[in-house]
Length: 325
Image 1 (cartoon, rainbow, N blue to C red):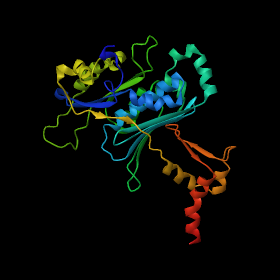
Image 2: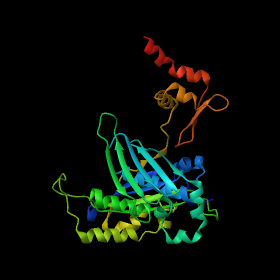
Image 3: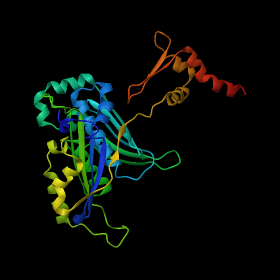
């Protein structure tokens, strides 16, 4: 098999920051494949759910990579459709995870109606009405930032554009695409990509060489960006720098150091124990299965944490000793 057909580290998982020098515009190109496989596979999502969650995780990667923060960036949807909840979060170190909660019966009804798939976009069809929230949490001693917008538009790209237009008032163009792999089998599996371009405000900028980007320059860059096809964005034979050169070489494109992402859940037995101890002991015991064990399953990675009778007794032992003291 030729190396150009291999999906893996050669395709992602990474973000490629760049700048269009003559137009003073900046952007980021994100590609994900192995990380998405690790995030989605344990859940065995239906294709429609896997596709929109893949794009949500990729959108979170594109947005978080443009921020300076030390903590966790979270992108979350809550809505009244068959897919009632999606969560994607990424740490400042690049650790990402995500999951979706859906109603299998309702999802089955809409997917059975093949005529609606082309007429209605994935957001109104799968998510329905609701909101999209962006959160940056840098720890207990800092103020948490959150932006919320309605789920407006046919796609997750439309929803992101609405957020930037209404909340950030920052000219932003986003292209988002994903594929679950071709049935023909060319070695190309699950992968997603995002291309984001921003017209940064110059007010308050540092340095005398800051240049105000004209409306014509912005429109020119967006037109060039729009010439990119989903197939090119997802093509494992094209490196990120090749994609960017094809689009913007006439205006001069400078690429910066790539940054890596990886699928990594933050759950642990200690975290689960802390959560269990926050509930009354009798309430936790009522959750025991027939064999007397309490099994806690992480919603993100599906890891199971098992507590037998002895583990449950030990869980509350320290608290009981502290109270007696």
